[in-house]
Length: 253
Length: 312
Ligand SMILES: Nc1ncnc2c1ncn2[C@@H]1O[C@H](COP(=O)(O)OP(=O)(O)OP(=O)(O)O)[C@@H](O)[C@H]1O
Ligand SMILES: [Mg+2]
Image 1 (tube, each protein chain N blue to C red):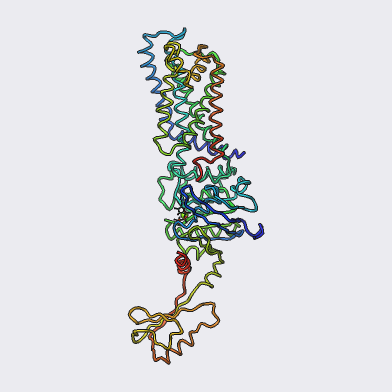
Image 2 (image 1 turned 30 degrees about the vertical axis):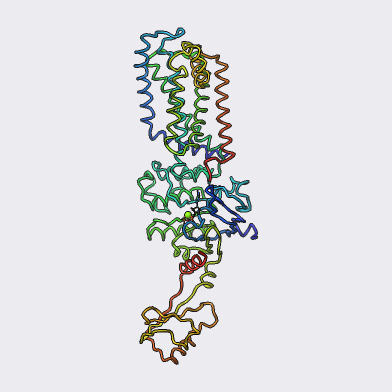
């Protein structure tokens, strides 16, 4: 393993984040606060509690997931797409590094950033509502696994994309709607049976449900299924990465 | 076949067909000797960059074998690539990174431990030290080119590929860069460069390769090439203009300049007898008088243009 190289890529990506630190921190803090004002105050005044948890506290895990998913995908896809776009990828391709090391560097940095953002949102939310974390270990496990999985997905998108529109499409048209549908801001148990079945095809349901369970021990699907599904998504992404590695897809002509 | 001791890069029967179906390299064979400066010349689109990219692992070859220092470039890619530094033709840089940051990044990427002293030395040699904390986007084109060279040198390569390193670099700095390249060769680095400034190859190279339409059409020692293909010309300025070359001088294959005021005689520099003495006495016999005379020697550029146009 060329750990020097992994470290170099990781630091390079982190310093890119640090250059835009201000936007990186301010925008999630502001949008989280807005969610509390809009959802918490407007809807929360009607729905006071869901399964014994105040509505404001109930939406916190979903809010964190929303940011975690979109930021992971956006950061990782941009991180690898940009060198392809500017041509600096020549250096990665001519360096004594394996694809695995490239993935570790880029995905590691993207996942780190979104985990930090997730924790930042948690801290912001704690200013508005009282938060309990019943299973801190599982909370962190879901946070890390989800960040890594969706950073891998972002990396794949960054390799597949051949324009900036495609980079935007996936987070905007797929991740965000799935997050809203996936019970981030409500319990899927309140949906009519048909729509409940539909949500079972939404991978985000499993992520949000498991994550929320680690806070309040309430879940839409059993936590074991959540863990299983999270690991399944991780394995699917790893398989796709492995295939890209084997074929040199879109990296080399 | 050269022994691995002598040739550091060995390219055999390498071909490359791009996804578009275009064949950019056709059965290329080339050996680069340890410690030499090799200049690869060829017109636009000849396949120079493609060949370099294939050796450096940026483009997959379609066929053939390449070994570096006796190691296969795919099987032993880690060892091979850590020996190679590449300065690409395109000015591709990270706009927002600083000079120091990007050069240090390259060193790490190639698996080398931090060594600020070395990076400082490289930046000094390339006259970039005063720019080390500047963002790359604030640099001029020629400075960016030098940043790319600094990146390639950051990890102390044994082999350096320079794909048009002096394009867009001003005359004075170009001379400085030649100095850097010569110093590298003196320290044992093998250098392969492409350039459209033939003068540069003439100045720097130990050997010259010419590629055209994806085929290597010539590989030769520079001095040998200049001697073999170099022609001299003797130009005579006549006192009286001529309409045609006189019959008696037909054997010399003279050319009469438009206007009839000058006669040119071309001869081989390596021939035992140049034929000049005979020509002069025959001119006298024919009653031609000349006012002045001068000789010119063909440059590598003339040789190159001659080679490439012959094969079009
Ligand atoms: N990615 C690609 N896909 C298809 N054709 C390509 C690709 N890259 C290069 N070519 C073609 O291969 C040929 C050789 O290109 P190459 O860049 O190797 O030329 P070159 O000798 O470096 O030229 P120059 O002096 O202009 O840099 C050209 O005809 C070019 O159009
Ligand atoms: Mg080129």
